[in-house]
Image (cartoon, rainbow, N blue to C red; front, side, top):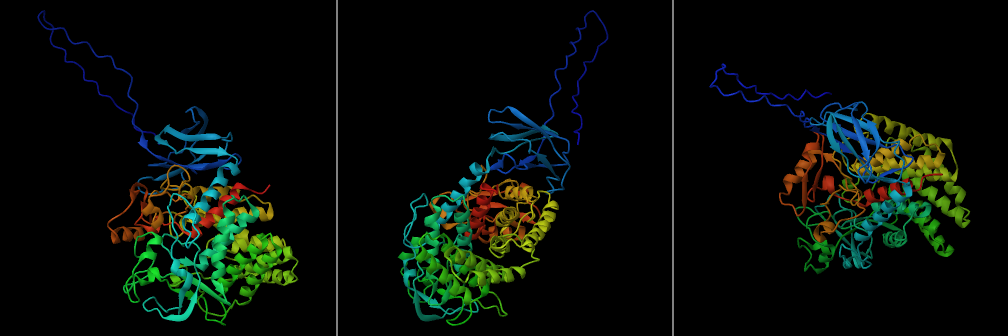
Length: 606
């Protein structure tokens, strides 16, 4: 678009009739340079961590109208221009204020350094800084940062010193009472059984602990440990998680959860903002409103002797079998393998809702073939390493269950581990149908990304938004490792970029990554200690109605950087405010997905 010319009106002097007494007319002013027009503001979005030297590098320009053809300069740290790029055709409108999204192709930028993009043509805009370097230098630090989130969210006696000022917490979990799994949370019925479920990690901004999400996190973490690059701190963190998962499978019974959400009759782990160690000082009696915050209920996946929900049996077995692969002591490795085998054999595949959490709608998983395929694959890989004769049987099971996962349309998430299952079964035996299954998912994702103005497969926002974007990046990287085919490399880079700032709001959704990231997460530890939860992945933009509801529900905020209304859409909003869990809550599974995606990025296939 061309701006209308900037007009300057010159007031001419009035010439009076000539007379000897008449004053001489004032001299005509000489016009100076025409002032430059004030350019309308636009926005430039980039991956705020940066790009590796050989990657496809696309920044996005959000402009009031189509800015195709506008020239932008890439400037180095000294402010010197090193590259000129031209805005491509608009990919469509972002919102009523920014009616065009124009790509800026920075792929020619390959020299390591720190840069930013400046536009003074058609519109005025400047990007945040970003780096160009090797993938390892850019993304290995983010893997280490992810571990810090888990350290900050440890429960139990074993705490890691850090800025979050943690102390031993929930010591009553050492002898917690098992409760019957309720139809709803209105009534809780204790059993006579007590179990030691101390330790583990908090699931999200509250203090609930779930087997479902912990097993998922441990799978991702152990794959990073096995395949690299793994920071030194990861070994101890995996051990902490495995110790708790071992306590949650005891005497042939798998326990699913410690803690309860709460309702009108009692307060649970969602209902009071406090540090976790404060629960141990509560003076409460049965029937008291805060009783379950100190004496937390434990729930089972199934009654003793009953089959275990196959999604849980598969993924928890996978976590133990991966531990067997990583354990250097053969005797201990066989103990891990036997635990995984015993649990896997208890899987039931009958009809009925899959068990996840109480209530189930915290994590309403719908598939289990992917979990069983992944579990069998890890059992087979562990058995091969240990020379166990059951390896062939498990490899056959892995292939059969993998056949039943074909045709899905999701990337890696806590709900769907099919991409991991395909990659691990392929490691056992390079079956081209596994690559074709993952390729089909990725082809669908590429089409979805092409229809979005920012190139995001998950659109403008929604539940698990950042984690889904990172899950697609991980899925594409897994495919490339399986096959050596790099056709989805640019797609993976773009999906990662959306999570790291190349989104409509210009926010990196990984705390501490880049310059603009959430400062007020919906997390009790981070908010109450006023510490940045470095490495945490938050949800990101979410459904507008959900965001509005949470803001109205809790008028007072302990920490708020405000809304980003200029960039909101009718269907999606983002708010940097601790009240709004829908946008700003970090979670165990989000951060584990990010850890794996960053590790796969940092160490691409040779």
